[in-house]
Length: 96
Image 1 (cartoon, rainbow, N blue to C red):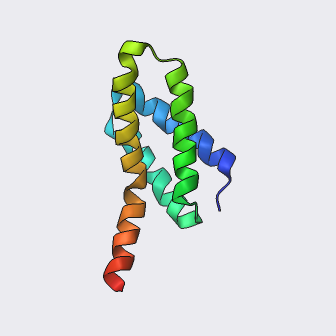
Image 2 (cartoon, rainbow, N blue to C red):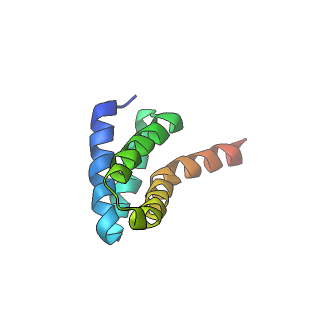
């Protein structure tokens, strides 16, 4: 298992970097977080909880007319984080 506090901190940093520009560098940070999570044995449920907590923090300070944009960005970022989990699952399925 990873240190949940460090993972949460790193996730928050990467997500907040992604929100204003939606650039590839921030997405790459998200992908790397996912790789590290898989390597350290972090569960999908733990990662989903971290994402949800950070999204709620962001939404608390988001204007109503920006909520849809933030939610879309959050989905894009989460999918990038989960890409490694998806690849690992497919690899296991292909071996079986």
